[in-house]
Length: 80
Image 1: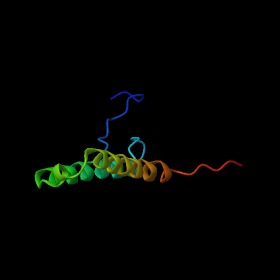
Image 2: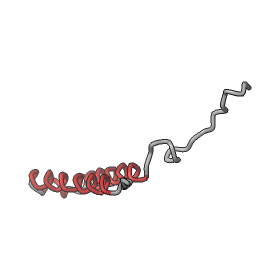
Image 3: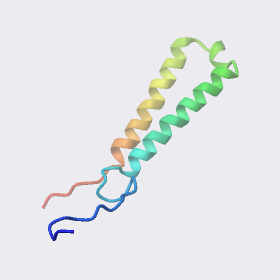
Image 4: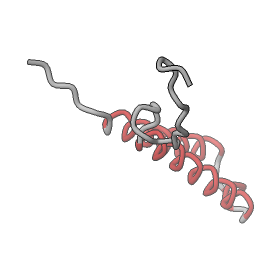
């Protein structure tokens, strides 16, 4: 191997330098949980008894809360 070549080291997702942060995993898990809750409510017949407008309002609030937590839990930047 030449002196200027580097050996490729496997990198795990979420490792430093890969660009994947814990909050990204949190947001993905949150939305997956939200989808699973909606599917289970639909399968149980609960969503069919609720007005569509209220279901959409609740969904917008849940997505907004997830996004708010995602954006506020990022790294803080301090300036000198």
